[in-house]
Length: 75
Image (cartoon, rainbow, N blue to C red):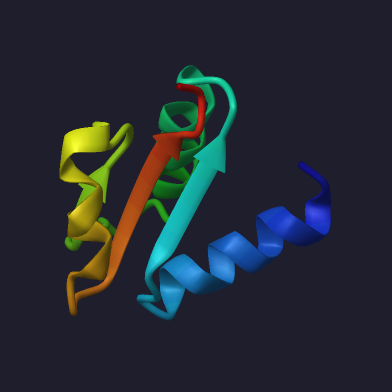
């Protein structure tokens, strides 16, 4: 990830947007969610935070609330 994307994601977290983190590797979304929540210290992310969403719960992406959800495209 380049600096511009990190700043954009940081801005989205502060503006309480819905954030989808998609990767081909299952560990990457979890690491990025933890990094983003650490960047906003001393504030806390109080919305839905799912580092790695299972495929069976993919319909949760339609939730009407702000969230930070990561999932892997690898089948």
